[in-house]
Length: 495
Image (cartoon, rainbow, N blue to C red; front, top):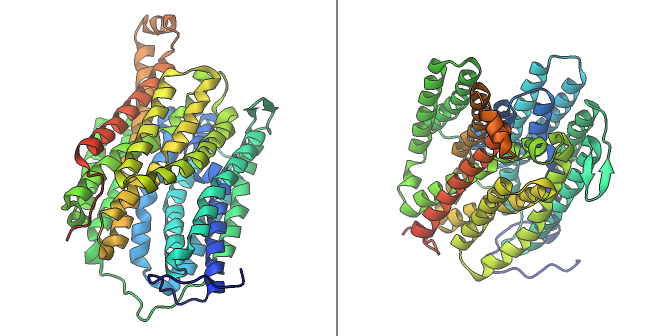
């Protein structure tokens, strides 16, 4: 690789080929570290298993995942607060370092003789911190490679990052199974005794993030002629109001469910409505464009599927006969293993079809995962996690559609908006947990109903989980219907 590849007319990076090659390798390496720590950074399955071990109900076990997606609005605020290109590497290192500190702190907390309520709070906090800093790190990585390499030279980096990356996630999930115990394709692992199993699992993620922070220091970012200035607060006031209101709404609704307080419940609804109004107003110019508005609706409906893996994991005792933590590693392994294959196939399909096909394909796979979880029991139930992992690629093909429908000058704003579409989907996780707890409580309070369900081979808890899968599937199906009937196959940027 001593000879510099020929540049295309569209390539305009001022860096030399060795500097660009360094950036491409570092991009793939940092992405690989994120995948290696995926069992704890992909908030949902592992955190739900730990919450269950700490005695939490389904609603509380879903809170780490809910807070993770709610916090994905924070990168937009970070971008406003620190817009300078010269600060890119520093901010990237801070994101990775913050994640490392949070994982290490949680590991130490689990080891200390503290009440379970404190440990639960730390698990939930780790979900929120990951939701804030990891999407920000991904966005900064993309900006670094966008500024520090020619477009025609990025294929190798993308192949390494998103082809080999999920393989590292499979290896991480294998280690998770060895720590937590379980059956992995005939191999039985006794696991490590609690709390050391979770201590080692979360603690091991900390040095991985430290490695990512150190690697990001060596990125080469070309300087710009004029650094962008921070916009006045008035330009983002609605964003600064909407994001805190969203967190307040989640807290109030959770408090209402614990204390059966209707005032808290209605206050939570009011806060959620205020957050929605503020965020919609902030992006009003984008939402006036019909295609982007329809793509937004489709994405939010389908992204509701991202919030179901906690319930899928918590359903393990009912459908597999053992604790959720025993299957967490295998479930993550299937999740990322299927993603490797699906990523290659869907990329090939996209080159021969259109952007809408990518949305429809991944949404349909997402829906199939819920149908499988709803109907299949026994060991074959685990395949639902593999199908789910393939469907998670909606997070690639929905932004791709929005990108295709955006003007060049609007790309940065529109792609930041696409990242934030996980935020309005976040309450779905709390809804799924509430369905399980509500069904369980109602049937325990009704004489004879529990016995009647048992005659069907279904406990009240199993019914609650299946209903949550049904609701999730209906939300995804709604998104598919909107996409088929209203979204154009080949979106065009407005004139």
